[in-house]
Amino acid sequence: MYRSQFISSRGNEYFCDIDEDYLTDRFNLTGLNADVQYYQHALDLVTDVFDVECEDEMRDHIEKSARHLYGLVHARFITTTRGLAKMLDKYKKGEFGKCPRVNCGTQHLLPTGMSDVPGTQFVKLFCPKCEDIYNPKSSRHASIDGAYFGTSFANILFQVYPALVPEKTTARYEPKVFGFKMHAAAALQRWQDNKREEMIERLKAQGIDNPFAMDDDGDDEGDLSSGHEPMDIAGADDL
Amino acid sequence: MSSFTESDPLDTVTWINSFCSLLGHEYFAEVSEEFIEDDFNLTGLQSQVPMYKDALEMILDVEPDSDMDPEPDEEDMDDDEEDVMRDEEGYRIDAHGFRLPRGRSISDQSIIESSAELLYGLIHQRFITSRPGIQQMAEKYEAQHFGHCPRVFCNSTKVLPVGIYDTPGIDTVKLFCSSCMDVYTPPNSRFQSVDGAFFGTTFGCLFFMTFPDFQITPQGDPLNLASTHPIYSNTPYVVLREPATVTRRDSRSSSLTSASAPTVPSVPQIPAEWIPPSNQPTTINGTSTGNLAPGLGPGRIHEPKIYGFRVSERAKTGPRMKWLRMRPVDITELDEVGRLGNDRDEDMGDQDATTIKTGKNGTKTATAGQRKKAAAKSRRNLPAADGANGTGQTAS
View 1: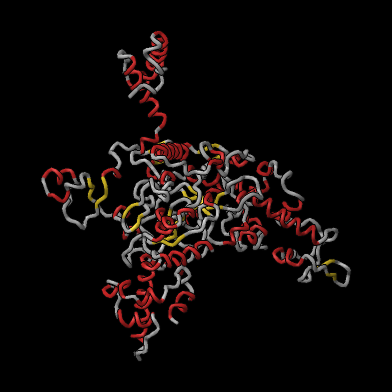
View 2 (view 1 turned 135 degrees about the horizontal axis):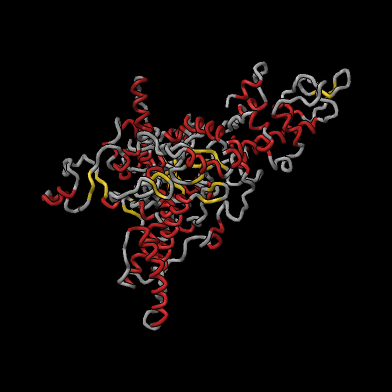
């Protein structure tokens, strides 16, 4: 079984198993023959009907093509209802990792591409809490083509399952020196906070509630380092 | 910095050496013995660290007992706590057959060991804010010992280890990226056992204040972001001032765009509103403009798209966190003091036409005078000047 072998092999943990029905429906593969070398052989290999004897070198080429084909079909499959459900399952289990940003807690991530064109950029991880994209921790994931997941998938998932959108937080890191905020960073953050308030006003005008958790709304209450007395400033001695 | 190596040429592996070479302790700088021996640097630590004296002796490799046998291997000590063994003379020995110092149980020894680590960490927190310490950390930073920012748009900016708290035992070490002004969890789980207080809240920020000339943005384009959008490439680009007219090839649009072949499609084009006006100051709020969060701002904010169409802010699942990664194109928007002054000037100009503008200092004194007048004036005709309190509110 090519597919089960493929998704269980090391480095392919982000991929889900494409349904056989989906893979054998030619409509779903429209246009891919232009992108994939040895398209027919690769498709045969992926659907386990490949039985041509060939040289090792040729076999390598076909296997590479098969991987590429699987990836491109994968990008299409994961935006379907079945595919979304499969990826959602992986997302809930945290198989794509957790957001490295401290203030996001351990928010689970989703794989995303920065471009839908293969060979442009490697796969990135999207955090639905801070809405930013990060590089995968391990190099074996960092070298997967981003087009195998596509730019739309992560957003479609939340369109389909809006209840899963995590609660946003205004908590953030404030650079401090001996307990005092650094002016340049603080000024930038005040400016950003203004932009946030403007956005909340815009949303309110459209009848949309404040998206941010109430407990850390407004002032710095939810901030990681606020309400904490600086322990000592003895390090200043030697400056 | 090199004092600790000179101090004991015979015994090459000091406690500090071995501590810093442990797995997971890669972020630590080697605190010089000079620094530890100065009691002033240790002020207040005695009350925080149990068995302070023994711990300090352990760090400095001072042997507390004259009849102590060869120093036991500390790393293996705590593993073998429960196996109390005795040699033929009745001394307690550890797993390697070393005699333990008399009068000290193995559990004492492990307390001292953990105290020593705590004490070293707290001294380390102070040391890396001192001149030799921050210098040593700068070398480690340059050598990329601390890794890179995981955020894509920071393009592998180097990070610094910091703590969220200065009190030990609350949270583990985090990595501060100066390009996005945010903190991240280290990618490797072995750092999950390193206390953040051993680096402290001050260090990350102080570092860039001490070395303002360090260029934060990495050289070139390590992540090849240029493949996704031309804004990330360092090649010359065309400014798209009038997106609709550029393709129309009329003389006006080509004079507005830059001189280098504006209609050639291979030259990357970026929107005009991303280009800062020419009057950008070199420093803003005490930081060099180029080093103030260069990883933020337009083009460096993730734009969620479905089949190429941007997701609207009004959508239930629309983007809500863009503010976190925003940075004004015109950096002077952050000059709060300057803007406050300007607002006041405009305000005064509105309220009293006789404002005398005589340079910066002159305006300020004039402003103060005018303000009193304006306030008095608004009090006199109160119903008309509703809400005009002489602050920036009425200036439109």
